[in-house]
Image 1 (tube, rainbow, N blue to C red):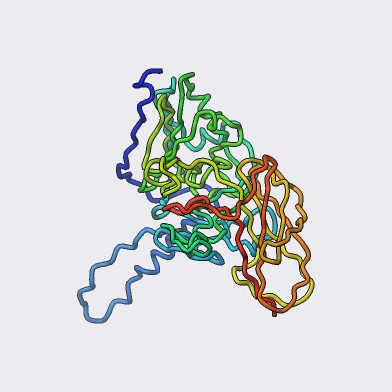
Image 2: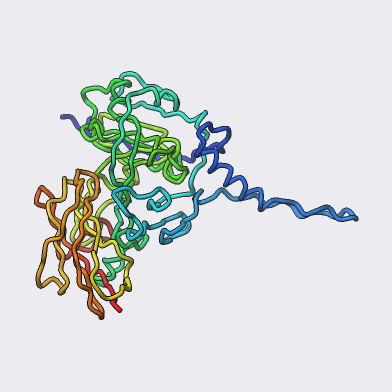
Length: 408
């Protein structure tokens, strides 16, 4: 293979002009747009004119909202750009209600007019470059699926909490993951329509946000049936914060690969490099001399209780979640004595790939301070370790943690 064929394709970060939302036909988006408009109007209402004309100060421009919907019950890790963590104790089943779905945006939420939105498909390994409208996308074969999306930095705060060394970035506990039902078009359908050449290597997915967040995935991954261009979330149109009108869903991959506000796909015959797989979302640290780029997530588990929860003494059921990018969860164990002994938790159905598994176990909670430790293993034999090496950007923390609980 010649050197030219292996030369990375460099993708820049040019500014992009976004249009304000107007006249969107979907009821949900209209409602959201009305909310934002009302907020903006409320800040710009002029007072009643006085009897004697006076000069009014110049009107201040209403800034574009960082997020369209309020944080609600989600824990605010950062406000600008918005980073909101899912309260796992409030999730009652497999699906995370949309108002509780975690949020991690690199920039302010763009407001996009679906009537003028276009998806551009091109690249050196495409036979028929094309542009698709939203209606074009709706007329392609669709599918629905449950799958989680998880931030690469989920669990980052525990590098400091249990390792004594702070990592860069938002200090997530374990609520940087959520599960939704997604409906959309398999990416493979769009690529087949464009005519992918046999020498295709990478598929770049790029958003219409100001940062032009772009992340390549290998052509083999892009052709998997569960990798989709989603236009619906939990039975409704995508909310603006979660990528309206179209986002990528790449099950098992780190969150940044699930590009929001998708507007550009490039299929290339060379490896694609962007700052989101060369500078960001790579492993930096003493244990990672080659600074590998991240792709799949790892295995994790979480207790569905508030951090430092306070409970009443007595008999209760402790519940939580476990998940892995490599397959179904095979077992979950719990320890109430600091890891000296481990007992099995009950795995609840359904237990399917790319969807977290629910688990539970009974506990006779006595007064005092306790820790609950959970350890998950998947069907490929991957298990949570006792500790993980620190990395500069705090990615992929999946060690067994001690969840503090006070019983009164």
